[in-house]
Image (spheres, rainbow, N blue to C red):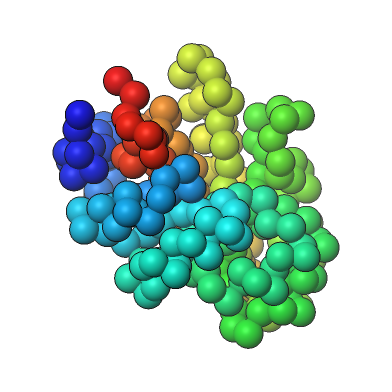
Length: 230
C-alpha cells in the first residue's frame, strides 16, 4: 500500500514529464489535493508531504478540515456552492472554482468581506450532466461582473468528459485555454483571467500539456478513507 508521499512523487514526475512534452515549467502548475472523500488525518498527511493547497466541495467538509488544520492550508472550494451557504464559506476560502451564475455572484458581492479569487466554471464539452456556462455565455457573464468589487476573475475551470477518448479530453482542455486567452486579452481590470483550473486524477497529464495552471487531484493522491484501491 503506497503512502501519500509516494503517490505525490509519482504525480510530480507525471507533471514534470507533461511539462517537458509541452515546453512548460513544473512551477507553473499548482497541485490541489482534493480531500473531500477523506478525513482530517489523511489531509494532514498531504500537508506533511508538502502540499498546502487543499480542495473541498461541501461546507461540511470545509468545516471539518479547517477545524483540524486551521491556517496550515490554502483552501479551494471546488464544488457547486449554494447561494444560501455563501455567507458561511466565502471568507474562509482562498479560491472558488465554481462561479457559474449571476445569483451566486450577487450573493458573494453581498456577503464577502474581501475580494475573492474566482474561477468561472465553463461546460466546454456541452454535457447535460455537467454544470457551468457555455463557452458562448462566458464572456458576457464575466463582463457583467465589472461592478462586483468583491469578485476577481482569476481564470476559468472545466471538467473533461469521463471517457477513454484522449482527443475528446484534449479538445475540451484546449477549448478552455483558447477561451481563457481570448478573455485575458480583453484587458478587463476585474478579470485578469490568467489561470486554468482543469485536470483530475485520470486526465491531469493531458490538462498540463494543454496549459492547466491548477490541477485538482483526489484519489490518485489521497486514496480512499477505507484503504487504497489498486
